[in-house]
Image (cartoon, one colour):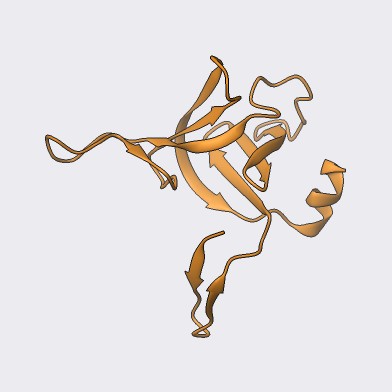
Amino acid sequence: MHERTVPSGFTGTDRRRHKVYVTHNTEYHTRDGVCVAVRDRRTGQWDPSHKALGHRMSGSLHTPQFAGDFPFRDQPEPGDQVVFDNGRKHHVITSELERVTRPPQEIVQHYR
């Protein structure tokens, strides 16, 4: 779990389980860091056979601004490429991340 500070001043453990990693074409929906759904942004259709499904978000690759910067981050930021890992030899690397957001509750119901 990650510590967070919100505008209200609350500092504590972030217990929210769901995140959506949004690229230009695709949404990668995660629960507790594991990809549970993938949706095409253009059509709105879910892809039940996407290779990222079941893979853990392990971090991201970014283009360093300075020589010597390590191009891997634990927490993806816009412009990074998200890395999903299945713990073996197979990785999925997304296109550039536009944003990280939270899914609406009605979308979370789709995961179940």
